[in-house]
Length: 65
Image (cartoon, rainbow, N blue to C red; front, side, top):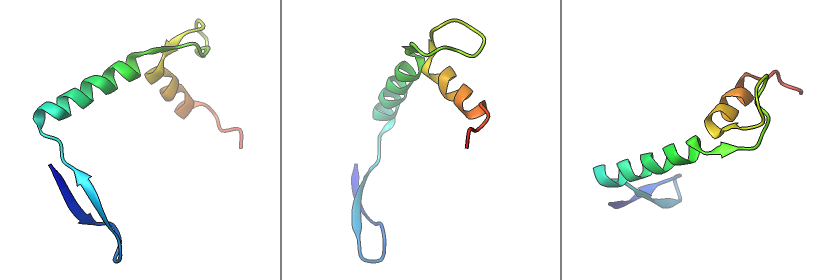
């Protein structure tokens, strides 16, 4: 279902609401994406890791700024 909604006082936008089937389909797609393996060295381990682990490690890594 698509609804028109106000974004700001002068702008309108569209928002799509997902039914149960579409939501489960989106969740499965995200699970597959985050479960995929990337070739980025894992801290203290081999040369491959899941995307989810990479994101977690980036959050925990000390900032270089």
